[in-house]
Length: 209
Image 1: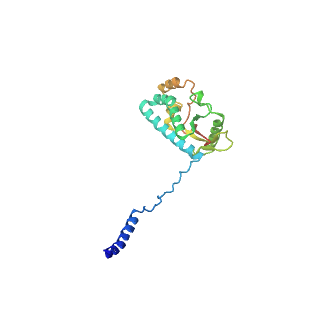
Image 2: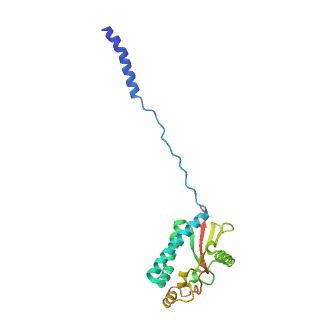
Image 3: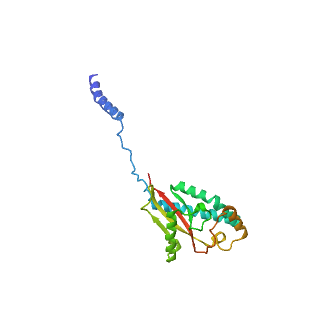
């Protein structure tokens, strides 16, 4: 009996040791982490350019569809009621102020008359056009000497394209004149030739809080 006890003692010790090892908690492994980089914050100029592109593309597509569907009368009604809504949507989407402004004295409505800073910008764009600058390059960006809360102002020339002449040219159809009288009784935005500067798309970017 004593010899059995002597044999069992080492075996019991091994079993206890194995049991202790199997009961030991697994080693803690740190969770792998992946470094993330925040996307770069767009500059004021990039914000202005993005907003201008969205506005001009959306407006041109919608106006083209309206012209195809309702002719110049429908397009004039669209510009009166829907174009401001597109500008408001783009302004909200991009966090800017945006719109179109006509050259002084050639506006559809007195309410659309240029503010002093816009009139100065339009004069500068016209001078560059007269000096031979291509219409596509008529862009003015100002980022200094601005009112408090304004980071940047941008203006981009709007040319009179051939399709614009139906509503802004010299020879207007009778129904076009009727629509202008209805929606814009004070209209002076006619008499243009293709290639003229009709106005500008403007963007004002506020200072980021």
